[in-house]
Length: 116
Image 1 (tube, rainbow, N blue to C red):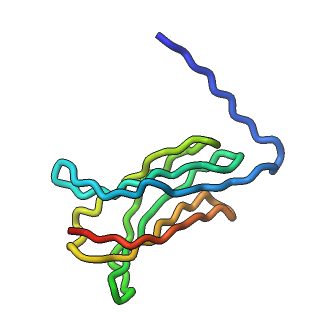
Image 2 (image 1 turned 135 degrees about the vertical axis):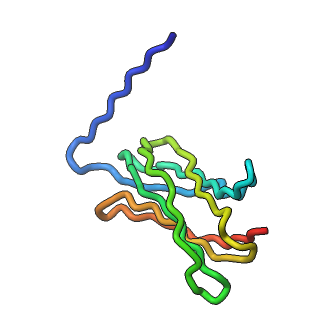
């Protein structure tokens, strides 16, 4: 058996909150089409972002908003978010990825996605 102790401190309002998105992938598993994304905390303070995806068709019309989990991300660590896109019809889409850490901590990225 192993034990671990974690101590987290914030001194004042110092340090930055920064997120990076990596390893975006579309995976088919157990009859589902899952979009998976690694979110990395490259800043100096922990962040607990609410993540969601917004899909737009080739005309820029909204197709849907898909929620993800809310997870705490400590500095120099990453977590994997996933969202179920099984109900989205096949086609090409523009995806907006949004991670809202609260206050002024809003992060985003945009990618092109092809669903088959």
